[in-house]
Image (cartoon, rainbow, N blue to C red):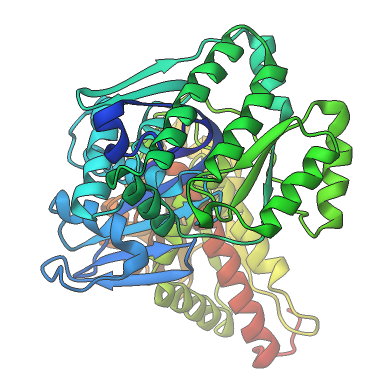
Length: 535
């Protein structure tokens, strides 16, 4: 499993001058910063003869044959195109989730493209610099997908941080804007983002701006010149620590930008922006190409309550609190399922969700059936495991006997071999560690009992030996395993295999499985319930 994340960005000034139609002749400049809101992607193997894509953003599950690229789902054209570019084959599962909505104006599509390229490069073991990833992301969106976009989103997401970007026919230069910590924190605290309750498609807006430049409309080109000049002035204001001047330039830039195309603003946006300014915001703009998404405002802290109240009175309630992000695209979990960067809850949960969708639900039902059948026949259920799996074994023993219990019905008889510390250590010390569980079964196991071994690797020798012994004694054997299943999967009658090589994911899913089985058992006891005998 591979997990990658890429940040989205807020653009302060110069937007539009990163369009090739402008910068190839005039040169462009943009000031932007990435924020700690991300798009996540998880790539894992699958036993299905297809490539499966799950998009949480679009609430969409899409399956296609890698050999039949003619099938297209428009909202997934970026991940599909990158998968095809890297010749991804069938037998892969891709999960996507973002912290911000689509059409937000925060550069999400560029971040998705950057993230997909980083993910597939990790999959192919092809290292790349931020510049190389950004260049390739631009190629995917502009050349392969034919989108009339600029370059800032891809470079922002790949590099991360507060940057001044200069674009020309000769290439792109990304220069970090180094501020003192106090100025950076004040800038961060003064920037506010409000969702305008409408998403927008930037393509027609950018296409209109692009066409105006290509047609050499003098007014449009002059506006772009001013946008570029303002971006330089904004950078200089920040470097000088002049934040009020920076905020005033935001307002100047927005008033020029909204004149570039009719769809960049509208009466509602104008009214909301005017209300925020009247309440104390010093400047702002609609994020991205315009038309909707988020409204970025600069308001000093003592004015922010009034700004929020003013917008709320006009129906704008959703504020996105954020911090700046200094880093660009990152691989959070590599091909060996080892974490290589701090893994935020969103990325971890997406990885966990990806694995849970691949879990064999039929195996969970069958485990419950076998445990219930043993209970009906007055047999015992034994559990065992080491380390975290010992805790899961103890938890399972408690849940099967107590949580699954129904008033008036005979409870399930369980025993956790990992809990008997004196016996476990005696067998380990006096005979061998391999006999820690097997030794305990010698005088307790009866034919028809169920023995459940929990081992992430599937190769814990004391668990495997006990399962092998139990099978020779006529017990029904079950293993909860991960990785490739190991030896335990080979020797048992039934295995629940978690398709992951990360111990945390494996242990989490094992515990989820315990809870699911417990619920199924309780349901069986409530409905048909064995006998009313208490002993």
